[in-house]
Length: 60
Image 1 (spheres, helix red, strand yellow):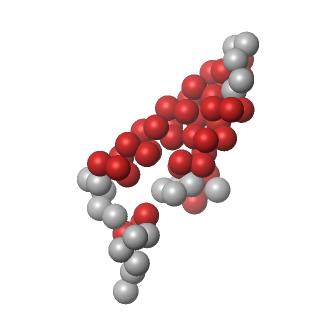
Image 2 (cartoon, rainbow, N blue to C red):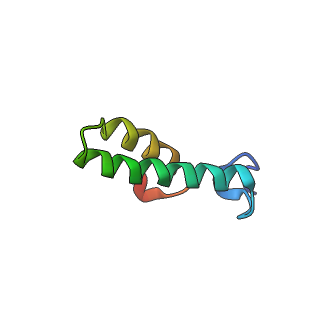
Image 3 (cartoon, one colour):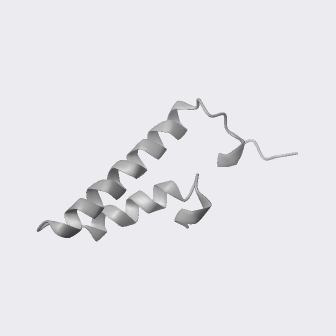
């Protein structure tokens, strides 16, 4: 039996899950862009990857 609080056991249409994934990707893309601009890119990349670790194993 799986834990209902586990992020992997939630349905694909869970709005909170989709918001976390979208926010994570937005931060990662903005962080990559900021690496080439005079902005703090790592300060955007780290939280973006932290959000994505809940859904993607490769982000950990």
